[in-house]
Amino acid sequence: MSIQKKEDATYELIISTAKNLFFKEGKFNATTQEIADAAGVNRTLINYYFRSRDALFDLIFEEGKKEDERRQEMIVLSDLPIREKLEMFIDYFLSQAKMYPYREVYMLTQIIKDDCCIYDKKEHVKRMSEKFYVELEQEMEKGTIQKMKPIQFMLNFISMLIFPVIMRPFLQNNFELDDKEYDKLLAGRREVILKTIFRNREESNLDSL
Image (cartoon, rainbow, N blue to C red; front, side, top):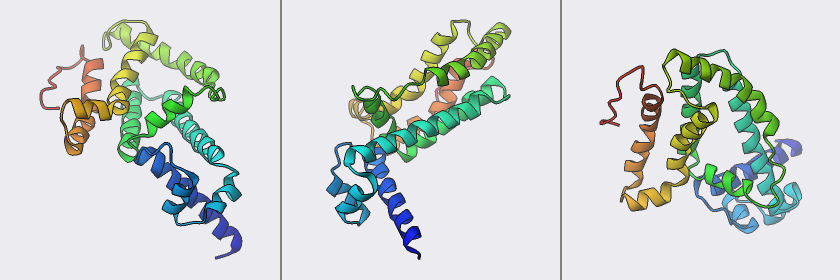
């Protein structure tokens, strides 16, 4: 292996390890030494590649943000029917939640930090919402979705999808559910959400989910 390829592999290893610590294990306060130990590298390499722990955190946050924006644009700006768009978005989100249970919590904590002003999605949201809101209103006129302001629909949809994920530790503890039981509940969210949204179009038998 060439020196360049070895350096690239080490760089990616550190990022992958840090993502697992943050997103999979929820260790948001992991130190540079803890990341290095988990990756099996010398701590000085983290400073070599990323300058500091905070710079590594910022990089991972930016990568997560860009991936979210890319996936959202791919779905929303497509010509697929609105139901298929919602299905794709739900599937992507739940697959990420299964792989990285603490990812959304981490992203949220970064967004609300005082120094996180770089997270400005106004243009990103405007570009997508202009198209999506028109499609929503058309679907509401057909009677397949209950009429409401598009922003209210988005608040409902996001809440139904994200709340059970970011509140998992609290909900799991209060309802006395083990990991397997809660994973099963999350797996059922797809049909629960779709049948709630499109309840004028199909029967809402959610007892088995």
